Image 1 (spheres, rainbow, N blue to C red):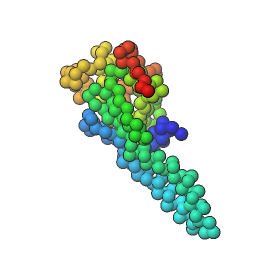
Image 2: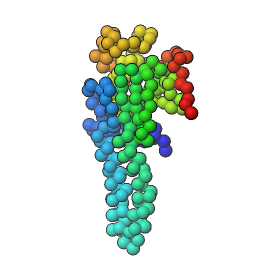
Image 3: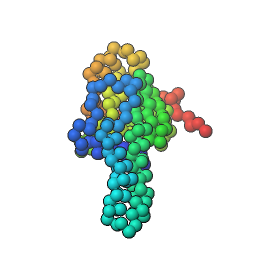
Image 4: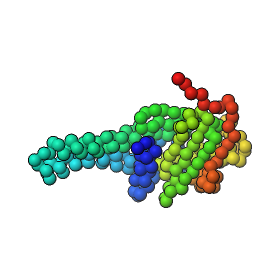
Length: 214
């Protein structure tokens, strides 16, 4: 089970719980956005069940071998619970003026500039959406994907809308048209209109191509 699975599962759990979605409209420039608080509660709930809840249950039900059943519970469910906890504490997105920085649950930090984006894909689920971004500054097998309900990506949407309208990427943060788009707070609707039926693609620039490092 890869990070995409845990991300999708976290998104599902967050989506079905009232008040769990991230409130849009907050200042997000240079802010490390972690998963919503409810995700932490869920992950620590799994941890409690794996290390305390199930061992106590097995001890009360099978008193002749409580240690054995406790070990089965910890070994069987403990690693999954620990991965969920690590995912919540380590994973974040940070939208800067020039690009996106994010860290996965294994604490691997990656970054790419907005102008290096060449493909954006949007997938609509029952109640939320999933966006995938590819960049020439990333290895081909690496892409940034996230649940649109868990992270406020207004800055990214504004960058993409500006690129579609103007034909080039934002050169300076203070650009008048870009600030107009940003103040209008473009949301998931932009992705639904431009990246849902087919991916939103931009020409690749040769000088932005990723070069792997040994």
